[in-house]
Each structure stands twice: as structure tokens, then as C-alpha cells.
Image (cartoon, rainbow, N blue to C red; front, side, top):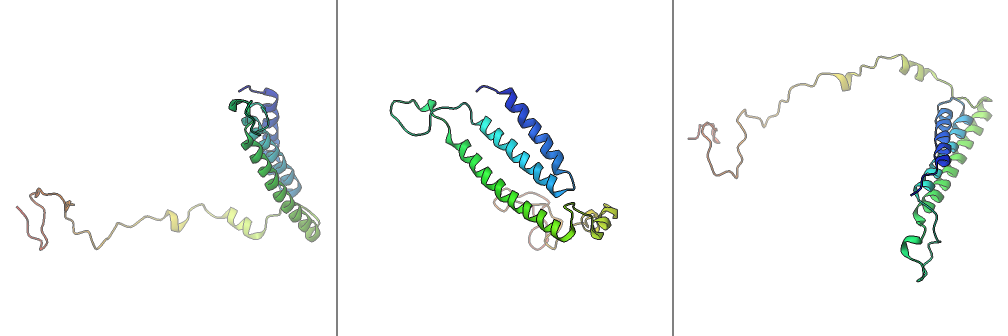
Length: 163
């Protein structure tokens, strides 16, 4: 497989700019960042598909290794459809945000600020775990019931010691 350095640089730039735009508070920039990320991913899948070959239509005169792999093309087509649906959803969110608030920036509400101020200690997950008080633990060492050798010092059913 040959490596196309220009394609790799373009993918890197698309990913870098896309991630930068995703971290913004403006929904329009988030949309642009998502579109750049999906295009970078499509280029990545296309590049991973290998060199171009013949169309994947069977002919007896063409060797099997000369065909083009149709899987990357199917994955890219699926990714395009999914990115179109997500883009339409985000455009709807941007429109709704513009109609209601005349801005497309995400604002912190009171609950977001309260969560940011609170301590990272969580009573439920950070508390000490009490010792196991199982009713089935009688303090006797475990003895395999299938084991035929009797171990000295192991208690029997009634609590008497076996020999």
C-alpha cells in the first residue's frame, strides 16, 4: 500500500480544526467542526481502502487481487448519510436557538454553575465500604465437596472437628 502524504496532512488539518471548532460555545461553529470531522473521517476510510482497482463486478478474465474493495465505499456512503442527518438536526437546533434567544451560543444556566462549584467528593461513591457481614460465612476454611481427602482441623456439619 502506498502512503499519500498530502492526504494524511489534509486529514490531520481537518481533524485539528474540527476538534477546535467543536470546543467552541457557538452552535454554528460546532456544526462546522462536526462537518470537518466527518469529512476527515471519510478521507481516512478512503485512504485505508488501498489503491484503486477495477470495479467490483465479476469477470473471469480479471484476477481477484485486481478488484477494488467495495467495503470502504459502503462505509463512506453510510457515514455521509449519518452526517447529513446529524447536520440537519444541528441546523434545527441552531434555528430554534436563534428564534428563541436571537443567539446561537450555549449559555450556562443556574444548575450548570451550581454543579461547577460543588466539591468533587461524592458521598455515595466515595464513602468507606463496610466489612462484608454475610450470613453464610461461618469462619471455617473452604473445603471442596468433591475432594475425597479429609483435611484435619476442618469442622463438620454440627461443628465438631473431623479427624
